Length: 520
Image 1 (tube, one colour):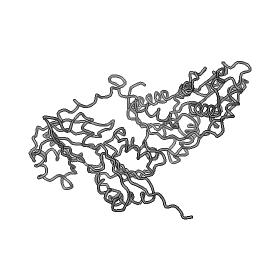
Image 2 (spheres, one colour):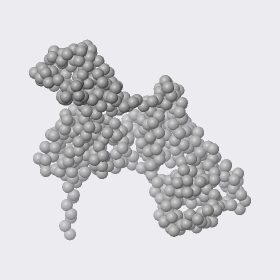
Image 3 (cartoon, helix red, strand yellow):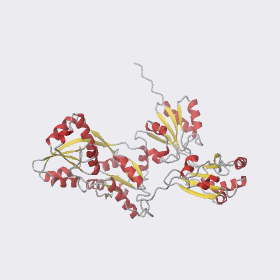
Image 4 (tube, helix red, strand yellow):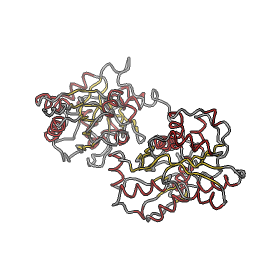
């Protein structure tokens, strides 16, 4: 039999937009989610890369001023080779791929090599960043045109005097990219070319990010600024034109601080979040709302055991109390129960217990309000509380992970209570997002959140080269704290197994280090 030919690969040239991952187009998100390889630039935001599926392979070909470690020709060779190997390749560029992004060169190289290619436009920083600063690049009575140029400093790629004189005569709005190191030179050259010295101008750094900063000034004031070294400067857009006088007046209102005069409680913190999905995403959103930056790296994933339905029907029928220690356990239990033909009416006389509010909410979504949730969301507190509620002759079913904490059954056994254990799922190491892995390996994080001992163990296995004594870990539950300490960390206890408790502890640590003084 003839071996089938590998399916041909394809390259998508995708514009990632100016920074905020929410400004990526829907079409761009669709192709990123199915990509095998993502070849990305330096200006693509970490948040966009952190959203990629774990199985994707990242190839960093980013260039910085004076440091082109991967040549344009090598980028062409990478794209062609990956596509010819049958892979789905996304070439991800900041802004729009065809606006000073060398996207056309890549498209032509792919076309010449016979590689299928599709272009997905993105929001250019020349348009999106001014809009976020409240500057419309055109406005009736002020500007009827927009000119976009680059400026890399005298002696390199500064625009010619002839071009600048023609732009001064044309009027409208001038947007200058890549000019962060030549601010004074730009102001002086524009005035010399015929732009009015009192023409409004604006400098916008780190556009479309939480660090965006706007400075309004005149061309004369711009000309007085110094020339700076290139390498440490943030992405910067320079605007010149009458529309700059509108800055801040047409933009969206600023997000209010949690308390007047106080910074967000997690401001400046980069926090690794190790919960399995989908609860990881919920905690990441909370961290972002409180001013922090989440680095999602689910260390484990849950694998339900097969053929659970019949076993659940028998075990649930023999027990009075059904006890759950995770939201995942609730979902697996009821999916298997219903799949085996279970009838909720047969559970009407049962009592339910949950280790914490998230597990209780999962029960409520299935139509069962928990009869008991301990005030402290830990297995030990769950066991102690149940011991005081279980009547003689009642049997407890512990529906949980195969390698659950021994604390809960130990307490029940010590009290002489009858219980059965039902293993619903196993936990195995997860791959994790490649961008998150790169950040963690480089030590670019401040805290790690752990919600179970298995997450601690999986994290240490995933990153054997980390200096564990230097890791600041916040752990939910005494058993999680103990596991982190056994492995060499100096963990802090969150007090209870909830997202809010983890963030409260992080906010306290952040205040203690002087980064912020707000309470959660």
